[in-house]
Length: 93
Image 1 (cartoon, one colour):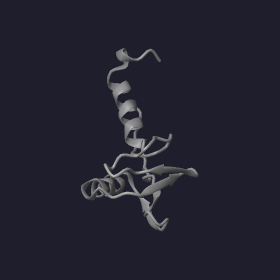
Image 2 (cartoon, rainbow, N blue to C red):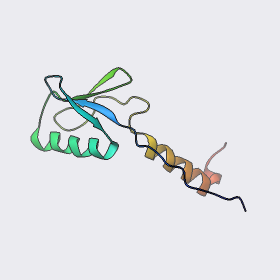
Image 3 (tube, rainbow, N blue to C red):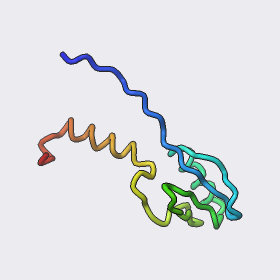
């Protein structure tokens, strides 16, 4: 049997900004979700984040106005990898 060992994954962080353009710091995926909940609860406007030089606005409902590859997609990618390993019959490759 192949010897396995866990791989340390450093969470991706993305810089967030207030309506005046002040940095609120680099947030992880979970911190981003919590912050978007605050925005939605308060119907706040003007907040945004920047990923790879692209601005992504966060609406007063907490939704990001678009998705950019690499925006907190690690969990989804790992879930897909796990599902493919568990259910290879559902995949052609």
